[in-house]
Image (cartoon, rainbow, N blue to C red):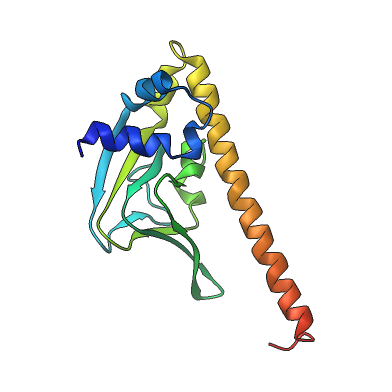
Length: 165
């Protein structure tokens, strides 16, 4: 599979581009780059500013997002192709706001969309930028819904155990 095919296939399978037509996805693909990570490499870490302002879209491989909670490492999510990472800095946050560690569990390929490249797209393709940002919001909403469901499940479990754990 060529790099261009990988980019197009990944974009078509991502929530990021659900509202875009094929021609718009192809235009967006022109401003995306591909980065390869080896198993064990960090894509993101708290305070990391290497890829600040870049949205990551998993194209292939397995990637895990973890956080340290109460001194213990907890898995937040196993990313699937099309999933996003680096959202907080992409939408204007700082490296200090990164709280998750994202690591390659296998060799993987990640699409990178730099905020500055998307912003330069704004004058010529405002609808694409608008729909991409709606896709980011949909993705974040999905994360929040999943975490809320997990919280409810945990609360129900604790309640059923009579508060014993």
